[in-house]
Picture 1 (tube, one colour):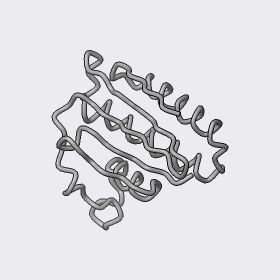
Picture 2 (cartoon, helix red, strand yellow):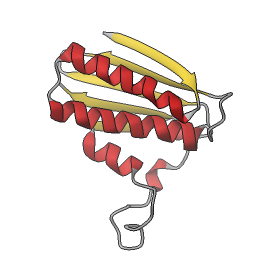
Picture 3 (cartoon, helix red, strand yellow):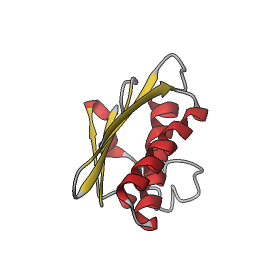
Length: 131
């Protein structure tokens, strides 16, 4: 299975990515745990692409693709923004960051997915889950 979607950078379009995850979960008969991890991770990735990557500019697009392999599922989330320095994302679990209302997305993605890699200066994210 391979599927690709693209949409304008508006928060309401996060539901398009949710629907893609639902479709993949059904196709793969994923466990509830893997489905939950996948859903949270992809929502975080897409929300970051919309709000931080594309700065909620509806003229800019977010692209999400998914490829199902026999032993894993790979998502690619790409925005049209300038990227960011993903090697220096603050740790949200430290005392100076623990009460901040944001800054947990990348941390969550890395904890919930089996593999996360940033490409193209941070504007493309590859996320992998074992089936």
